[in-house]
Image: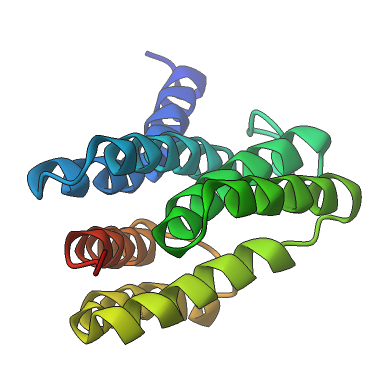
Length: 184
């Protein structure tokens, strides 16, 4: 095997492993036997998050070895899919389907036109507030997930395998516990 093939295969393996931690989103609802609609939404999130982290696994915006470069329409589309799945999982916790779909439409329009993610952040953090209000014990896994996000910002907003896995593990347990102990 020559050096170019070795580098190519190593790069492909690194890209695929970048999306593996997202599988936690589909595993935890199955382990805790959540309702089927929650499992479907979490599986959608796992798939979209995996795709996002595979495409986002770049060292530099101009990295020539990547499948796509940052700030392209394809990158924005992949980020949009991930955001839609986040809104779907978080919004269905406390909003009606009609409101969730309206927020998805608003988010998609804003993301594709101006690359703003205000709607996604608003839905995520308002869901965190509602879930912690309903079930204070969900704060613990959410805080664990925040350590991964803290490390992400500490290393110049670059996901590595450790902070990404901590972020996904904390959030998957947070969402699962939120739905598991949700007062109906």
